[in-house]
Image 1 (cartoon, rainbow, N blue to C red):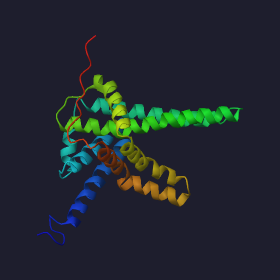
Image 2: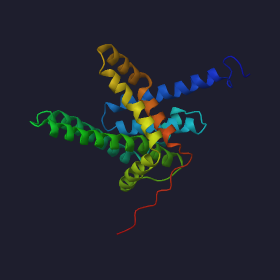
Image 3: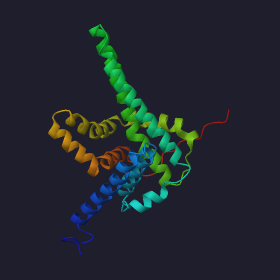
Length: 221
């Protein structure tokens, strides 16, 4: 049956795709409130997104079953690190406003924006790479984090147009929320329903990882 709501229809595929992202988003949103659950929640969304991109059903249960040691701790540390750096950049943006020199304010904020851009580029590739390693059975521990970050940044720069596109998907709702209270309410609804997982899906699309990238282990000192 190819028409209507049959399993081979486009409507069924769209509903299945949406349902997978909504389910992953719900788990990720709730887990974020535990702080240490933010990383596994982000990784869960990337796992579901990667499965969908690779032609799978994007089942939440299958993705949850992959979230086990040793990859959980790196995911926790990466998310905490990203969050701490984002908060630090926001605080510095406010502090810079107290500088007496307008020129220094412009230069300092330009530097902050550059660091934020690098952070965003790294983010959109980091989680798809980690998800690809998990799905492909590559063991990833805390010791792999520096190498993962370096490769995420290098690969994001090598595919800059796609990386910027994924960054825009992440940033656009936040910018829209500044327009008015009504827009802010819509943005909150967006993140409550599908925004987190859709951002992760955009990162997976940008990365186009059919297999985990070959990342050589660190050489022993």
